[in-house]
Image (tube, rainbow, N blue to C red; front, side):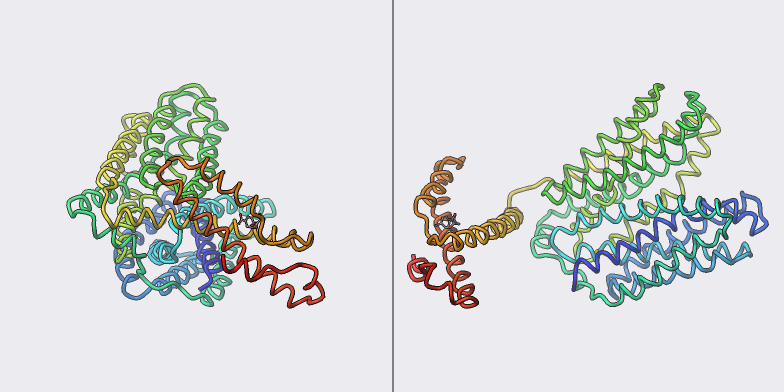
Length: 497
Ligand SMILES: C=C(O[C@@H]1C=C(C(=O)O)C=C[C@H]1O)C(=O)O
């Protein structure tokens, strides 16, 4: 399995999915003319996507645990291909509705296969799931520009559908050349830690996370649906500023994905990050809901995008997946079923609230933010670290992962030094340098009781560093024997001390 190419291929699907998310709304006018139907009917067709999603998530998640991830990623791609090709030509509303359902199914099949695959690739792939969001955003960013270009050239609207279809056809070949990781391969530490958790705490965390599946999606959908209208009606902001707020939210979201990806790579705890982001979302949302000053709204909208749409939902899912490492597909399905219910109910609830006032509809997002914060706080509390053999060993695994990475870097530098010493005809051993290294270790050690042990470890590191240099030297000399006499080999001493 080549992690890089497989990841790239999986990400490419989410670029297409990003296009799929907005292609209908972006082509609303053109479709309405083509179908000879009013905008309201076109809008009704869109609801098919939500229906397809809700029904497919749970079934697919479960099945992907049984039949493997690759099948479902393929089902997702093929369904999307049918959707894009079909929608470009269809002129019958019923068929269009059926195609919208197919898009919903495509979405669920992709998710059911992909999120689990990233976790199953091992390593720190939880952060990889966050990047899925980044690729969706790229798709959502590029499509409007592409459509604008088509419109400017008075070209056929269907080319935007063809663009997505072309990427999919290419990726169907590309992806099917890759091998997927073994299914439900929970790394030992995760499996043990999950088993060690008392049942009551696991149930509590599951309730919190399922709830977060709903609130995290609701928080974003409600915001994007009402923000522009809210600031126009409530504060009298102009149309440019109203749309700018939404763009700032998107830019914040992309920035958030990148920053969070880096934070997770550097070993930030997902639990703490999630609670922090939800506190931040609530505060920034409150600012947007009550600040009537444009510049403050702009900053808050960017920050809200960063915190609420910068991969927080994916972090929630990652924590959920670690809790049930043997049924990742089912968990992904369950989590997104709750999200789909949010996508379906929020427009209905806020539509009803908007009859009272637009401000009431918008500010109801604060209730969602509070509910989301309660969900993640409950989860974080239930999953608080306790000391046991298994959890402490998991901590050691994480520390070792970092140490090995640093040791690899150290050896890379030793390789450079070895070359330089060979060029300068210097011996491998430099006792005074080694003494200084040991002194520095003693100075740096924060715990006096550890110091002699740390020094012993360093002696072993340096001894191996010398052995490595000597071995390299020997191989280089075999390649160019003419230099052998000049370097003054110290093979024996170096290998044996
Ligand atoms: C890497 C070197 O070679 C040897 C290994 C050392 C190390 O691993 O830190 C230090 C001194 C040398 O005996 C060096 O000269 O710096």
